[in-house]
Length: 305
Image 1 (cartoon, rainbow, N blue to C red):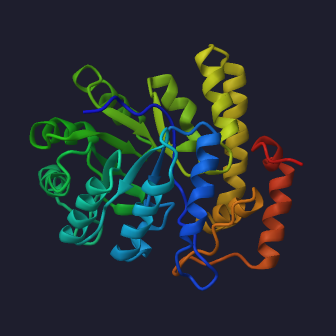
Image 2: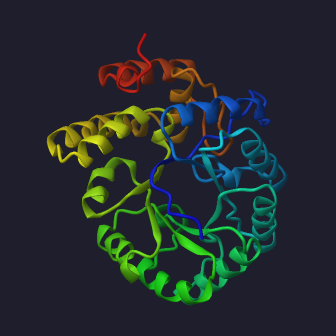
Image 3: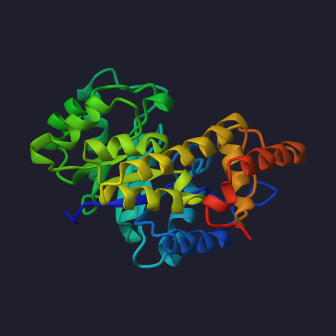
């Protein structure tokens, strides 16, 4: 198994054209921007990437293009979660063929597993389709309704999934997170997934994180990480609060559709979202821009002119 991922791993948006088709040409700009911002990796086709709104064929194309153009230092994790086991396995197998750094799967969210044992059995089948790649479970109960203690998951999965690398832990349960970090003397890579409370996770021992806001305000988090590393908690708290204020604006203006609009504001046009998500109107974008200006978004994101 390769060394643990550390630092910031961005969860990129899937760029689309105005007609809703994929805009693969934008991936090079996205990848270069992430590398320039110091990102360690890209977690593609996840929640931010609207993975469940894409067809399997589209996800194969997106993954293939990311692996073709991403700078070597940017490690690409392909999210392969799907409510169809066979589709998930096909995505996993393809990721291994194209040379992805790792794969991840979220829990099935229609017919949900009723126990940790069922979840591990499901993940074992997905991971087994790409035995040569590190496998991460993507824990996000707010979206899936699959909410077991990840400490219990690790105890069982560590025995049954040979290529288990860790967990993308997108949840506020810091007790469970800390138990996972310390499981078997820190054997697994537990990547934190709540950007708005990253500092709390760092205090508990986090060394790597996956997040959507790293796409458009990486400088804030890089400064946060640097301040924490040198023991300057006052500065670290200030940078976390800056991120929180921007995230609050994004949430107030619609969440993911607003975040995609924010990408355009920093010069990377990822286009529209897909239904059932709703794109912002011209007026709504203007209101978003106004509120972002009040919290110094472009300046803090390193995009002020």
